[in-house]
Every structure is written in structure tokens, then in C-alpha cells.
Length: 196
Image (cartoon, rainbow, N blue to C red; front, side, top):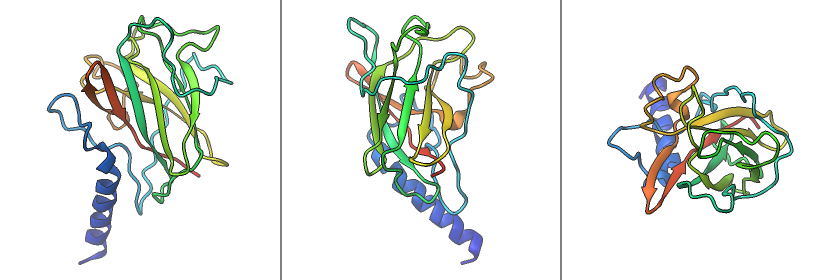
């Protein structure tokens, strides 16, 4: 076996290992999505994207962004934060924000804004809603991720099978979450690979 075949085999193995928690929540349709970013000998870090004009610093620490009285469809987002060497980024900070069900951002307070910390295995979880569509954009969630002592990754996460994915000039397929319906909510998975 030559070096290229060995590298390819190792990358496939690592990708399969990282995908194990995703087995129960494949894509909503029959569309095959790429695995969320993986790592290996050649680091494949999660791509960065613009924070957009509506970022607010110092969000509250909370694992649920669901607002009282909201009738919007619920979303539970979970995954792992990893280094490019496939090691868990323990206690990584994840700061999320998105618009409400009507496609509007709260620029005075912290509605649909908050941060969580990954556990010692790099795992994180957030309960929120499926955001509305912001005019001119496809449905998305903003996030800043930072491993302790590492650089901040600012990016956006996308939903599969959204009609505006094709027309949104910012959309990147590799930032698409794996999403499945579970009763009256959607479960989503996304693994981040960040500098530590």
C-alpha cells in the first residue's frame, strides 16, 4: 500500500468514526450530504464566514434560546468541537445567534442569542427554534467557536433542502447541518474542527 492509499484509508476511517453519532439523524430527504467537517493528516478546519451586521457580544450563557410563548418549530442542535488532530476541544465556547421565526434579529436585547460551553469531550448541545428567513438570505444560524486559548472561528450553519440555498451567495454546502424531524421538532448535528 502506498502512502496516498494509506492517507486516504485513514481519512475514511476518521470520517466514519466521527459520523457514528450522526447515524440516527440523516438528512430529511434522500439527498446525500457530506459529513460535517472532519479532521485527519491534512487538517480540514470548519470554514469561516462573515458574522454579518447583527452580532452582539456578551450574550447570556444558556443552553436554550427558546423564548416564552414561541410557537415556532423547535430545533435541537448538537455535535462535537474537535482539533485538526481529532482531539476533543474541551470547554470550547460556542456563541449562537439567529433571527426569530419572522426573520427579524433582536438588536436591543438577547432574544435568540446565547452561548454554551462544550464538555470535556468537546460535546455541545443547544435548544432553539428553526429561524425564519432573513430577507435575501437562506435560513441559517450564526456561531462563533473558540477552544480555550485558540483563535475564534466565526461561521454560519445551514439547513438542507432549503429553496434559497442555491441563490444565497454566502451559502456553503460544507456548512450544512444534518437534520432530521423527530416528532414536532428537528434534531440537527454539526461537528466543528477548530484551531486550538
